[in-house]
Image 1 (spheres, helix red, strand yellow):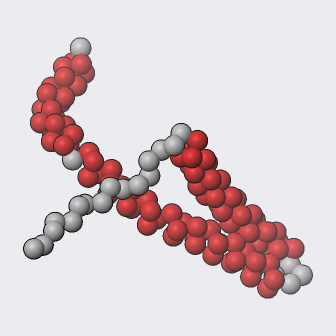
Image 2 (cartoon, helix red, strand yellow; image 1 turned 180 degrees about the horizontal axis):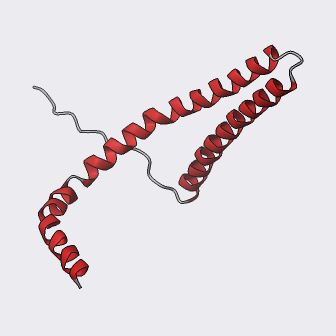
Length: 114
């Protein structure tokens, strides 16, 4: 019973903040989408770099079987990372095309100057 009272009191106290947050949901979504659009190319670049590091390790490993095994696992992680990112990107594009989702951001109309 005490925890229910605490939850209710906390909800009542946070209600003004939730109402204020509801007004800024669109701007929050725009900011999150902007961050995601910046992060995705960086993640793809990191996966490519990891794969290339694995290739270099494999080439420089020589006859050491343990080093070659470690390099193979690094290359595999890089390939799996690339595959997952490209697969999710493709799935999102298929869903957007299938359901005819609008991906255009409306432009702000220009004010004519006279």
